[in-house]
Image 1 (cartoon, rainbow, N blue to C red):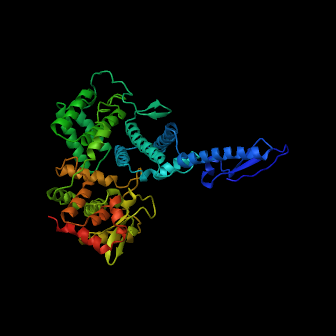
Image 2: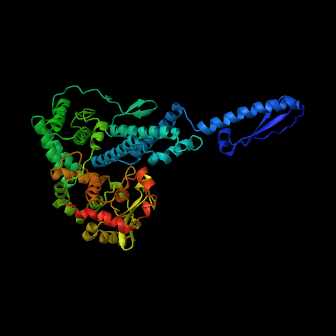
Length: 516
């Protein structure tokens, strides 16, 4: 700030206030402000200059400390705008993409489920890095200065955005059932958007016949179709036998739900999936004219998605017997020839402890070598839209000797020779994820081999890695590097862990081979 006397035509004096460079965005980019002192007396002018300097310094101090602060209404307005646009984009996609099969809807729901889980996990863990770029874009589009990512204002906006993402998945999930209602300027789901249909005299075909026609016109894989046939029979047994499809009531579907939860003791997440699948059949039946429009008796009966997914987040590692049951099954082994992406992705998760999506998005260039040791280079860098969960998730993980012996490197070479850039070119991104279909396959495989514990999923292999390496007395810093879950204490004690020789990482990982 400098003092400059500048008389105008009337001989009054002016004072120039220079604005610090970093604060200029708050003053429309201006570098200085001129202030009339309203006097021609220099002694009086000096007194007024001191007053204005003091006020200016206080203003600058406030902007330095709270310049990026936003009101709660302003934060909510930014996030509401994001939610509206995201929902409109989803509607545009549905309008332009043509008819959707039941499988398309299931895949879409699966992607929404993962989006919800990721947002909820980041919210609980206070991990705002994954949405940092989106927050920056929201602020930039609003014409506001960039935020400090370590500041309170950024954290509050990031948390609102994560909540909006969870709300987006809930709205979109209900839209799959065709439930819309106008509210707050955009279409949202309603818990009771449609009244219960009036009782009518049953005239339709038997449920078993409709289910048979459904599987014929909406084909599934052999394994999936077999599971659905078995579940349809279980449904009929629960409601007292086969009956016309238009005679099946919401009370019948509630009885089936209680059978799943109370008699079969299945998880809320599994119940949600089974009710959703049954609802899909009734929705199809409505389109075929077998039941009245909006008379789906299974609609709205699925357990609360939030509670089901929270329950599903509690994981445990596989036992040795359970691992053998899954990975030693004939159906899994057969995937090597028929669906190699399923075979190798699941095994890579088992022998690296990596997250499913980290493996699914790997590119050929990510399979590298150091000192003759092949390794996975897990990084967001490269072509396409690769991501990692946190900065600590970027890591190098040796290719376990068991994967080498099974022929993983030969598989990668064959894919490279075929001209593909992705390790698993069969997987296509949907809603930012590419490995969802493999997760669905693994869940079906678990059911088929008799493992119904909801705490066991493909992600449980991460628990196996950490528990196995700890039991084998692997150094903690090596475990942290291999599973990509480092914390501040580790970084403080080992400033250059990412520079550890690949040989040490390999020796640590190979301790898994010493386990029973």
